[in-house]
Amino acid sequence: MNNKVRDQWNHAVGSWVEFVRTGKDYYREYMNGPSLKRMIGNINGKKVLDIACGEGYFSRHYARTGAKVVGVDFSAEMIKAAEEEEKRNPLDIEYHVADVADLSFIDSESFDLAFSFMALMDIADYESAISEAYRVLKGGGRFVFLITHPYFEQRWHDGKLIVGWETRVLDDGSREFPYLWVEDYFTRHDAVVDWPKRVGRRPYAFTTTSYHRTLADYVNTLSEKGFVVTRMDEPMPTCEGIVVHPSLVRHTRLPQSIAIESVKLVSTIPKPPSTFQP
Ligand SMILES: C[S@@+](CC[C@H](N)C(=O)[O-])C[C@H]1O[C@@H](n2cnc3c(N)ncnc32)[C@H](O)[C@@H]1O
Image (cartoon, rainbow, N blue to C red):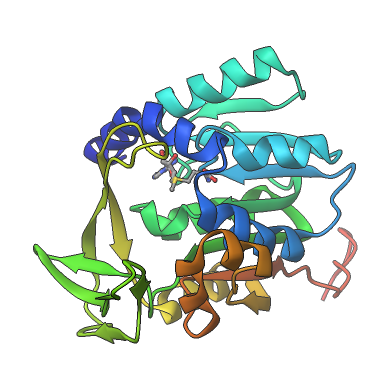
């Protein structure tokens, strides 16, 4: 458990709740959320685990669409906010405060689907988190996650911006983003993520921590744990999103995130009877 990172998310909660619940997280509203929903599809009646659920945005979404949802997050403040909302508008969601690298309080093979929205790159021990997702899924169950794109997400390393958008301010005050520069991809590192105060969007500034890894790190970990990758999506903004937030148009050229679907393999070779003598 990384206490510093957990404390950062506990501190962020007031600003985060406002940002997410008032539709001001427009990447979620107009690009990344639609991608997750397309990939997950209809899960009415399914048992679903929301890994690093935060204040419960997608737990609520899937509970409303008929799934039985369990949400887990290591920030007690995030879970408190989720539970307060559950009290106001009950959706039969069960929340737990826990590090998703250790879900030993959850039975093996008990979920149809596990998903994680914009969190795996913030989880220090992502390999154990993927291993736990595998353990709690039933055979044939899907694990779907969406993360910032390891190639293209703006990124700081040791106080220096090493992946960033070239930005030009035009005469009318609008901004143009001609290209993205990338200084280094292969060095794995912790990255400070600053979420500045934005009037009407985030009431106060906060800082969190992400862990830069390569795309191969994620895909090979899935494979090592027993998952088979079945689909990927590099989301583009919706047309409505571009109209409402024109800066999103740059993501019709380069993605900001990636969604990956994988399936827990089940052996189709029948087990020999217990009396079997070779
Ligand atoms: C960017 S937020 C996304 C939250 C949520 N999925 C959403 O859609 O808003 C990342 C979340 O990951 C959680 N987190 C980071 N590391 C974790 C860990 N090891 N175990 C459980 N939660 C973790 C944080 O507390 C935070 O709520």
